Length: 109
Length: 109
DNA sequence: TATAATGCTACTTATTTAGTAGCAAACTAT
DNA sequence: ATAGTTTGCTACTAAATAAGTAGCATTATA
Image (cartoon, rainbow over the protein chains, first blue to last red):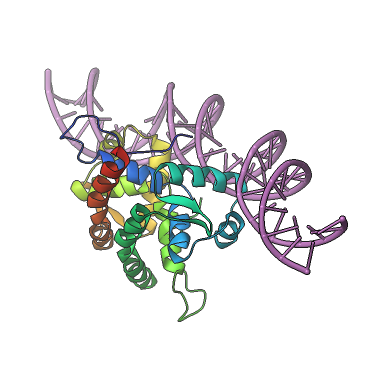
């Protein structure tokens, strides 16, 4: 499984390519969840696993590698944690919390 | 495959539940992409398929059903298109475009 | 120095996604 | 009116991804 990363197919016309890579990466099971959990606090491998409903270690391991390669997380003394890039992603994804609440309200109607 | 929808497990303490459902739904291959394409313009089944790199009709069909159930898209004369809820999701996801560009720049370094 | 927790890897099974074919209904051109 | 084309699917099989379980080497803790 290769890590989706933004490419530079044609310099100056990469519009839309980067976000496609983002969709691809974030559209893999657990990735958004992992970033979300790490945005609350750094976590160990097993800690992350617990937070993520006991997700299988094999998948967690591959996600850690992908997110590391994408420079969104890194390994520290305190466990896995977000890079600055990872944190900035969570900031842009933050409005999703509010939207989700609205979504829930609309569906309930 | 069931559609992830926000639930009301305990009234008043659903914080975080709705966004988990959002992560689950958006974290399925093609869903963000489909919404993205429909945000540009309404599309027919086959039009959508083409825009999405020729994704398989079986998966597209199941995605259409899920997104419809989640009230993010609906079927119209002009083809599939976003509901108001779907549009508002794309608005909240819009900053991701800018972030992706920054991500690309950082990875290139 | 025994015990337990941690960060994995290996392996198998289940689920999801891809790929291909094709068909019924609607639309279009003759 | 009717032959050809496009559209919106469904059915089926194959490939890829995710889940589940076991366990082991290393490090921390008692």
